[in-house]
Amino acid sequence: MSLRSRLVILFAAGTSVVLALGLSLLYLALDRQLTAAVDADLRGRAADLISGIAAGDRTAVAADPMAQLFATDGALLTGTSSLPGPLLDPARVRATTTPSLVRTQLPIGYRSGPVRVRLLAEPVGATGEVLAVAVASGGVERGSDRQLTVLLVAAPVLVAVLAALGWLLVRAALRPVDALTREAAAISTLDSARRLPAVSGSDEIARLAATLDDMLGRLAVSFARERAFVDDASHELRTPVAVLRGEIDLALSALDDSAEVEQSLRAAQDQVARLARLTEDLLVLARERGGSLVVHREPVDLADLVRAEARMPVSVRGEPVVVEADADRLRQVIANLAANSTAAGATRADVRIGTETGAAVLEWSDDGPGFAPEVLASAFERFVRGDPARSAAPGSGLGLSIVRAIAIAHGGTATARNAPTDGAVVTVRLPGPFRNGA
Image 1 (cartoon, rainbow, N blue to C red):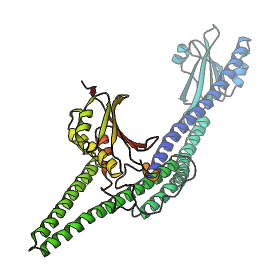
Image 2: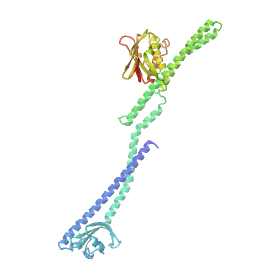
Image 3: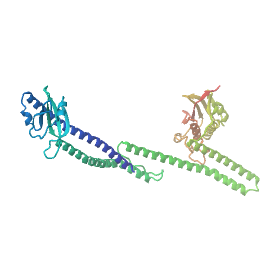
Image 4: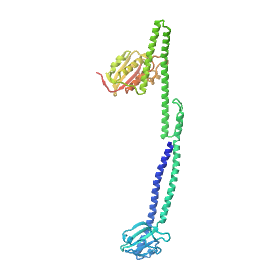
């Protein structure tokens, strides 16, 4: 069952319940008003007759359409001459000590048998006499029955009309959803330039459409990045594989020249090492992206680690800091930072170790030319290098991406900027627990 059908059914059911309660209350209120009008008429007639009786005039009782005056023993003293029988029996006369209103049947009908009446029995002063005043209630009851019939007939009609209006309203409200569904089904791939249609207004559906359209945009950007990553990885892998194949072919063609074979095998060995490094880097990035890059935490002195792993002249300053981190991964961070500085032409690096707002800080500054303006914003992206001629640039462009991935795996961050003078500055922040070194 569609959402539209469910909404219409729920709307019709709710409307039926509300109408049933409302019409029932209306029927009860109208019936009570009719009964109250009849009772008020009876009390008014009784008050007028009692006033006449108190003045010694009982003729008004006989002239009333339906009234009788009884003695204390139940005997009929006077009353409407057209009534074929008494309105009260003797037992009821003797039991009447206060005014009472009842709906009953009396055998006073002329041709059709008992008649339903509304009857008021009221004592007359202190004499013990009882006045009975009545009015036929059949007309009032028939009016109430007709009113109930009208309400029972009108209720289904009202429910049907309101359900139809509800269906039209739901269809109009869900029309943008249908358009969004058709357009979303027509978008076959994430690289499609098509977008969801804009929905006017600021209601929930309009906000949903805008959110889904933004999500499609982000997915398209992510898809483009992943495709670019695959293209870049294929490009990076193609070169060493081609060189490796050429060296192997050269070695096979020069089997009688041991020096040539050795040179080709050593060149092939270098390319295999390059492939291994690239594969390891890609694996680290893939694990970090999938949230499965595992770090094994142990106490690591950052200053000692920098001095031991930096393969270039470095000066370390600041307070000694020991962090709970993966030593092997941090060695990879230091090695990549040194390699990045060396590739940029730096000859030495200045490393500051310290703590800031609950995090251990490793700030790497080199004396190279710094990041190019067009590269700075994307320095940590994969396969980003300053030299536009990729094949001539050393490295794979994954060094800083690995640095950021390892920092994120530790719950930290990595940022890049240029120094006020010359040189690149990369700051790695690692969260606690940490302690100052001895």
